[in-house]
Image 1 (cartoon, rainbow, N blue to C red):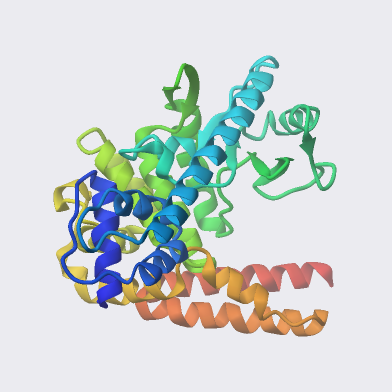
Image 2: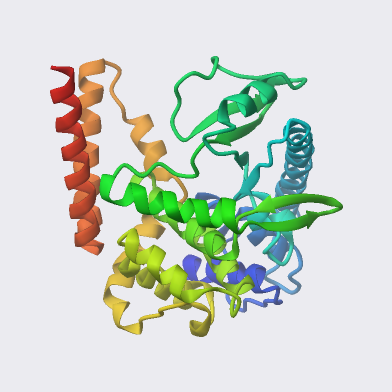
Length: 368
């Protein structure tokens, strides 16, 4: 671990666990803040830095930059909350009760909810209410859509200025046929059968069950890890859910869900990183396994290299302009991803590659 990484994690842990910090050695604030931005949690780190005293306190210029980031994040949350309340009220007037995914539901688990960064709203409405919900939200003042909703993936986007809202008919895309049915049952349990009703400053909302909050936060992290790059922002979310719901979870249910989605080994490996890097207590990580240290070290290197969605950004920047070359480029990048995934999680890499090839051949055969 480099000196910058060590300082970054010292600040991040202080933010997550609401503790003070005093770093004795010289701090390269430019490098630390750059790393925090790369991992999507520069506002958390900035909050701790602005409270420091002594010789290693950031310069006035750097403090002004940090405070501006914090102020911008708070204003962003205020606007998102306004659109969230407006949308939920409109849906409820038409007998549709949405469930809030991620975003504010995760932010409330942090010591200071206003410091968690996110840029959109995710509302789960399910298959039955999906088309009606999309039509209703399209009709709200200021709503904008790129096209009429006809046949979309797991969600449909409605934008309010710079604030997107995703309307979910399913909470996640699961392309593996063997896992699709299992995930549908998990989703029904966590989003329909046992949601939580929580208060957001006087406005009640449904969020997923505690087990689903923990499972889905990790599942979302895993999806981005294998597709676009996962940063410390997403690992922090998992740490906060485990900490908040420690001692309140049905661990048999959680274990069944992880086994059904073939994620026990990734769960334990990420859990080791949460303990060693973020300071989450071992006892708060269900099914913790100290024996996965070597795999966790490789995972840590991947996380620090790729950051928050940065593999996706790199892919877009390097994509050729010609359509045929784009397909070749995408094909090569996919198999490079499988190769890197196999270094850490060979079983999961094989399942992902096998599913992709199987579905790809089926699709091409169907076209013929």
